[in-house]
Amino acid sequence: VWGDPTEGAHASRRMDGWPLRDWKKKKIGKSRAEQRSPSARTAMATATSLSLHGHGLGLPSPTAKTPARRLLSVTVRAMAPASPSKGDAAAGESSPSPRRQVLVAGAAVAAAALVSRPAPAALAAADGKFMPVIDRKAGYSFVYPFGWQEVSVQGQDKVYKDVIEPLESVSINMIPTTKEDIRDLGPPDQVAEALVRKVLSPPTQKTKLIEAKETDIDGRAYYTFEFTAQAPNFTRHALGTITIANGKFYTLATGANERRWDKMKDRLHTIVDSFKIETKV
Image (tube, rainbow, N blue to C red):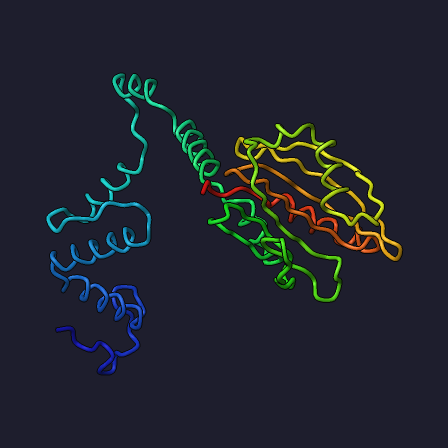
């Protein structure tokens, strides 16, 4: 036990060349350090190493039997990269590089996405501006703009239309046929012309075929066309697509008033492009 050097008449005397206040601090600090047992000092060093390991530095966890000073040396050496041996170098040359493995994995993911891609109707409806129609019994799917209402029209399988703009609508019709492919009926322009004049427009309206082309979806041929039908007090600008499947002739038609064509044409093209034969029934 240390005596208090501040007691007595010589309280201001320097001890061993140190001021009394510094002398006390040095002696008390040394006493506390000496009081720690070797096991306590080892435990503190171990706790420090564990703290470094827990902060994500990648350091190995120390063992209770390994001195703290030796653990630090081992840990630092473990972080340094080791030089590859001749055998390792030969193995590295024969194994694919990480960059090549990433590229191969990316190609596999892309291929899987192509194989399992969603149907056009699901893609078009994903943004919330369109509603999907999927009729597996009839064997088709398509989308129509959000807000259009389904109405019943004789001779049509399904009809959706805008309740404010009556010329904005989409309809689908099916009739039996002995043909197996739409190309059996003739080229796109001839088939579309006859269909527009005789089926899709009243006899009193003047029609004009603007464009007709053939497209292919999943190995099936579709004819897609654009036309206008002029009545005494309005002109309807329309799009259509036709195909043959399951012993049926499918016709989807959509359109809008000519005065609203520029505003509606992108949505109408989305409807036509979404039409697809789903299953064979």
